[in-house]
Length: 107
Image (cartoon, rainbow, N blue to C red):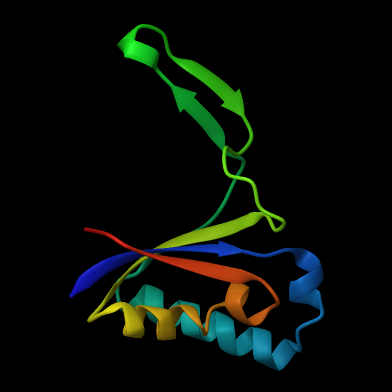
C-alpha cells in the first residue's frame, strides 16, 4: 500500500449549505478511514518556520500557502494506488461540502 497526504480546503459557508444527511455520510466516511488507520486532524492556526543556514530560527504567524478557501484539515491515508486515494478523498467533508481536497502521493 502507498501512503498519500490529503489536504482539505473548505469553509463554513460551503459546509452549511450542504444537506445534513450528506454531511453525516461524509463524517461516517471519515470515521471509517480513521478506524482503518488514517491519521486525520482539523487544521489549527499555522506558523511558518525558517532557519537560514541553520543560523537563526525565524517564525511568522499565518499560512505560507495562499488559497481562496482556508485549509480545513489533513489526513495521511494508505491506498493501493492514486485512483483509490482519489476515491477516498472524493467522499470526505471538504470534497462534498463545496470545498476541495488535494491528494499528494508520498514517495
